[in-house]
Amino acid sequence: MTEFTEEEGRTLRTAVFGAMVLVSTAEPGALDQESRAGIRAMTHLSPELRDVLAADRPELPEGSAADVENGVLTALRLSTRILAAKAPAEALAFPAAVVAVCQEVASADGRVGEAEQAVVGRVRAALGV
Figure 1: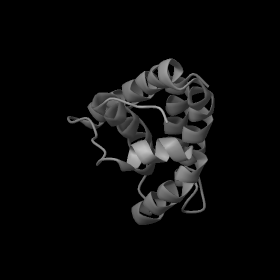
Figure 2 (figure 1 turned 90 degrees about the vertical axis):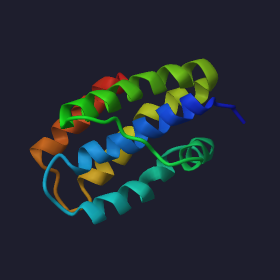
Figure 3 (figure 1 turned 45 degrees about the vertical axis):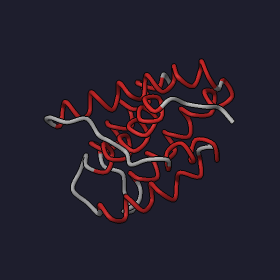
Figure 4 (figure 1 turned 180 degrees about the vertical axis):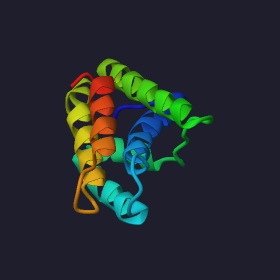
């Protein structure tokens, strides 16, 4: 099992949970449904990464909505670098898994709005896919 520092684990949690929050709050909707969909969709991530995500409470960046989004997108970019350095196999699967989680959150209420789709696009760009 790959060992991650406390800071690396925090970055991974901010990236994954933050991406779900960005999609979920992009449009008014069923926040509870979307949260549950995101948690269920975590199965797209490896058991090892799920353990890292469950190890502590996620932290989102503070500030305005733009500050939060910028912080989450930065965490996504950093996460890909952390995984490339420490867990190359995880690095290959991580972007697609995070995008799948975001898409499940976006479609939890039966439709994907333009704002949600735009956020998923920015998440994809941050992940390099």
